[in-house]
Image (cartoon, rainbow, N blue to C red; front, side, top):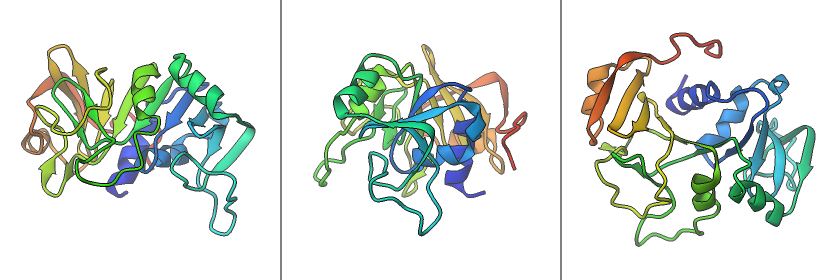
Length: 222
């Protein structure tokens, strides 16, 4: 599997049956491909859909059925279209069990920067600020490095999305959990190693006493 698929598969393992989950645009939207439809999970998008499914086959796209980034999606039985006020009421009211977002940087405190690169045009923050603040669990799904530089940094240089620390960081190299003492390295990816993860990470990592390979007890790996 490629790096993005690996990340999406690992994130899917964190999703429990019956959850209401928001998936951010880009890589996080791939997670829906690896959650069994029979699990009773409903995916939400802040543009006003509950019950998003995986991307439809080519030629079956519906221009009226998209995620918040405009990407084509399908709908599962029981899906609903809602207005933006209700959608953000769910987010801000703390009714989302989980949100999965992409990231530009995450720092040693677990704080996320994912919406703006200075001096570059951006459409706006969208729902990211509300999602990080309001969801019960926040997972960042992103590549570990960009252009040879670690995206897990000692201190963010980009504008923060929220002051709230995220709950889990899942990359193509590792699973890292922000805790009070710092960033706890919990898992390392296939074809990686503890040493490689540490070398590829700018921020200091605390190696868990129970560290294990990613997917070591997975039922989702294929």
